[in-house]
Image (cartoon, rainbow, N blue to C red):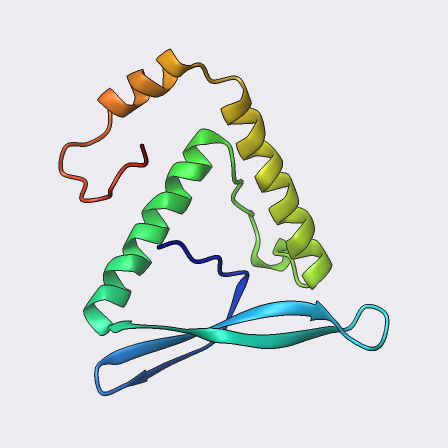
Length: 125
């Protein structure tokens, strides 16, 4: 089962469970205004949340190593508006598309052979 999560809202912890509100950004009544619509929650044990946080950190580091993402030298250079974040994400998506568009089936097979054997992720067929 696949879920598309556009953005997250509040994250809360109660009785050892982490609840992450999933939200959708929709245009508001005024120009430039954005309204958040609740689209459900992801609920998981605290231990799973910590493991996922570590996995996201490792994935982000790998994206930096591949040149898909870039580190910012100073915290004040971080995007502050929704428009800046959206622009950064759009360029990220283009980078992914460019990387996969030049692939051949042989390249994919070679990469799958190099995948770590300890991974518990299911691979798509």
